[in-house]
Structure formats: structure tokens, C-alpha cells
Image (cartoon, each protein chain N blue to C red):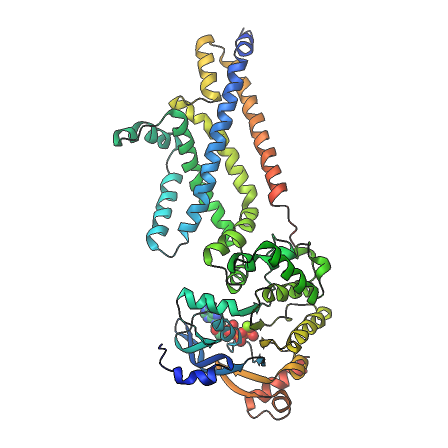
Length: 222
Length: 258
Ligand SMILES: Nc1ncnc2c1ncn2[C@@H]1O[C@H](COP(=O)(O)OP(=O)(O)OP(=O)(O)O)[C@@H](O)[C@H]1O
Ligand SMILES: [Mg+2]
């Protein structure tokens, strides 16, 4: 046990690692944006009056939540090109993260929607608003507020899951670290450093979510 | 349902709401049977009856929060069917106030009142705001316009709910037990608002057990039991000479508990 720490490769690679952090943020933000769109859209379809829509969303959620993310991302990256759809690693990663996060978001947001009292919906309808408007203007915001903590922790998970995208060499922190490590064999220093970097990234995400919460969900409730 | 009875439109013209032989089922349970009710423009109806007698169901059929299966409901001449067009037309004419206020918690009082005029009627922001402020002033709560519902008392919330419904310029107002979720000291402010509205000539159907209110403003009191209208009469007659045993029993219970 005479391993001598040597942070020179980390210090030399710092610009690359920071660029990797940016890549991670890009994947996370892109994935979250897609996930929230899929989440909200999925909830609408999940409770639509067309059985086919409801069934399709159920099947989608089952499939995504019960299969490994790594397999999902491989499928999009390696299998879809056989069907003529070839995407670069970064868009692939964003789509995979969005689809995966979206499946979880559907279940979370649906819980929020179901927590809204029927009276709110009836008040909207009685005022002459159509169902779609009632959902968008009356139900959605309180529903998101109700589940925001769960949604935020799901999205922190999504942020950390971006590291799986290194498996298809998307540009993000873990793949940068792997490259530096394979060139310098400084595993402890390199992975120790990015561990801390991920911790900071998670904290920054949480701070971001607190800001959103304070900005959009701070209306008083009983 | 058909539109064959144009011959009736002479009488229907002065009737704001006509319910003819309306039947309503929840699954196999019949909640309304053989409801016939005609409400003239400007008339005030108080609807009472024991719990589960179908009072809420009846008024909720009028703005199609509940579908009905048989008979006809006309509001201002529009035959209320199951299609979106007639439902829209009717909901534009009919305002509703709920037991639990149902204000939108994420909007200020002012926004609560502006939402539907802007989004359902397409009225511009300025006009919607002017109307909202005007009506909030009329229910004496204009100073709370920028607060959120959770910051108001129950009585204040209910007055906002009344103003919000009035912002759609309805020709009929439905009230479903508007004071029964309120602390006793707040009942009066809401009833006063409703009395003022009645005095302005609004057509009103109120489900309430506030018999003082019924005596003061109702043109007719209607008593329901088990999904049917049992008896209806002007309040002086209704309270002093109820014809049916069920009505007498009900009045006895209600007056004892108040
Ligand atoms: N959505 C529903 N599904 C099934 N049955 C219902 C439904 N809504 C009401 N009912 C039944 O219909 C009957 C009439 O209900 P309604 O709410 O109209 O009564 P109500 O006179 O308003 O009573 P309350 O004074 O308790 O408000 C009751 O027996 C009730 O259980
Ligand atoms: Mg009721």
C-alpha cells in the first residue's frame, strides 16, 4: 500500500473536466425538459377518454420503468439505426433520459393531478371553460406544486443518470474522466474528483429547483 | 329529445329554466324522477330537503355538471343536450356557487374573477379587470383583490366565488348550500350578498336550509325527497301550512336544529 497520490493529471485535465460538467448539465437539462413534456402529455393521455391512449401510456410506463436504462440507451443508439434512425450520442442520450425520466414523471404528476379536488374542476367547467383549459389553467399548477419535491428528486436522479451516457461516449463528465483515467491510470484521483463534482452538480440542481419552487409555487395555501 | 314543441316557445320565452319530466340515474340508482320545474326570469327559488334527496343533483343537471337521461331541460330557450355546443351556451348563462367555494388557490382574487371571462368569453384583459373590480366592490371585498384565496376567511372566499360567477354576466345563479361550510359568524355576510343579488332581480335557485333567507327572498320554496319534488309553495304558505307529512317532519327537524 504505497500508492502515492498525484493530482497532476486532474489539474492538467481540469478544463476538460469542467467542459464535461457542462456536457452533463446539457444532457440533464435537455432530458428534464423532455421528461416534463412527456410527463404532462402522458398524464393527459393516461386519463383521456380514449382507451387506446390510456392503454398506450400504461404500456409505455410499464416498459420503461421495468427495464434498465443502459439497455434503453443502447437500444436507441444501436438498434434504432437498423430501422433507419441514426442519432449522435448526445441527442441519443437526451432522448433516452427524457423518455426514462418522462415515464417516472407521468406517475408522479398523475399523483398530483389526482390530489386536486373535483370541486376545482367543476368550478372551472361551471364557468364555461373547456376540459383542456381547465386542466391547463386550473389543475396543472397546483398538481405540480403538490408533487414538486418528488419531481425534483426524480430530476436529481436523472442528472446523475447522465453518467450512463458514457456507455455510448456522449460528451459528459464521466466519459471525460474515463478518458483521462485511461491515459494516466490515476483512477483514485480522477474518479474521486468527479465524485465531488457530481455532488456539487446535484446541489446546484437542488438550488435550481428551490428557485423554481419559490418563483412559481410560492402562493399561500391553507 | 326533439325540437318539435315550438308551440311551447310562447310560454318558454318568459321561463328562464324549464325542466320537464327530468330523470337522472347514477348507474342503477335513480337520483331524480319526474322533475317538472319552471323558473321565470327574476324568480327566486329555494330548494330544500333531507340529505340525499337530490337537491344538488337537480341544480347540477341545469348546467350539465351531471348528465340527465330522460326529459328536457331548457335554459333561456336552449335545449340542453349532450353536445358541447349547447352545454357551452348554457354554462355561459348560468353561474354556480359551491358549498366549498372552489376558488383557484394559485391565483389572486382578481385573477380568479378574470380567468373565465378572458378564457371562455375572449374578453380583453382591461375589460375583464374592470368588470372583476366592479363586482368585487359589489360584494364588498375589493380591498382583498390582490390576496390569494388561502388568505381570506370562508365568508370572504364565498363572496369572491359569487363575484367570480357574476363576472360571466350570467342570467341565472345556482347556489349549492353556499353557507353550510361557513362558521356561523360568517353566514350573514354571504346571505346579505345573496339578498342584494336577489334585490337586483337575478334569477336564483338556492339549495339552502337557511329558512330566514327563504322567507325573506324566495318566491317559491320547493321541498324534495327521494329524487322527487314533493311540494312547492310561496314561503308564507310553505312554512305555515305544509301539506305533506314529509314536509312537516322535515321542517320540524330543521327548525329544531336552528
Ligand atoms: N356521483 C354519484 N354517484 C352515485 N350516486 C350519487 C352520486 N352523486 C350523488 N349520488 C346519490 O344521489 C342521491 C342524491 O344526491 P345529492 O347529492 O343530489 O343529494 P342532496 O339532496 O344534495 O344531499 P345533501 O343535502 O347531502 O347535499 C344520493 O343518494 C347520493 O348518494
Ligand atoms: Mg347536496
